[in-house]
Length: 373
Image (tube, rainbow, N blue to C red):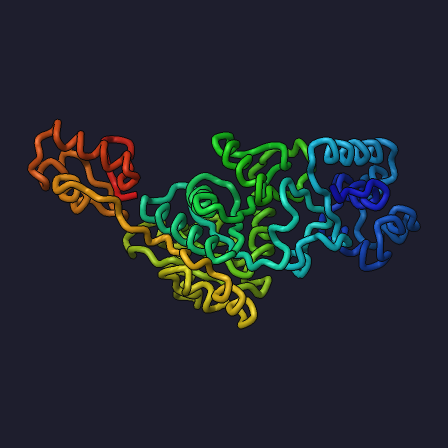
């Protein structure tokens, strides 16, 4: 555990001061160098830098001091790393952005970003089967190539991205819009535990911070800031993923997009980004080839000999192959359509679909719809 109570305490005091945002914090650091000096600075000088009267009272109060001490004690008890911008373990890529979080909470490994390339994969919370498949495959292939996958643990594409990395024992980091102790959505609690075993759960928010809606656009700058580039898989017109793409551009990072059908509402975001100059992605190599030469050489030189997600399909019977051939990744097919197309009786069709599911080739969706997995 890297938490050094005395060195971190002034940083956490300022972080917990109500009304003292990241940009004002940055002004304090630029003027005084370290938080300790800011806490002891002249009142008028602090007001000139944008510190409100109430914030000034809070940052110098015994109540905030006690909260900061309790925060650091809890971090130590729960095995959470607390890093300040001055800490050498603070992710170097994130440190480069203009509004880097002064304090970062990390549950898991500090090595997940050290000397490793990283790519963010984000998208809609309501993806199509095609979007889920693409996010999982890209994530798995990139993870096999030694790349850390960064996403936001949200439903949909984010979850698929984390799942893809975990499926090949790769490293992934989840950036939260809440404290690291509050996993949202709740159904991803088990996944978060798996991520923390080898990767990292990351947040700038203190413990017990509820996942309020306004927190998610704020955390998006960390997702893009932790990565060398961001991939948008599916996103509607006003998707938060487009905020991540914009932030990546502002941070001078690469932006990638997976094209989709022009009639699909979830394709609006990535297709629009492609028109604006984002790099088109068909497979993981399209992403790596756009990175700076040292990173590109590092990745291509370290790929595992068996690093291919294009696994051979399990052996199928003639009837299973017939059913499989009538399914696609992109568009769900109803069981009635399958019955018409395959001309199999309902009992036989149901049995073949079940065996295909057990072989991991087919997934059943609500309403008796099926897609290739």
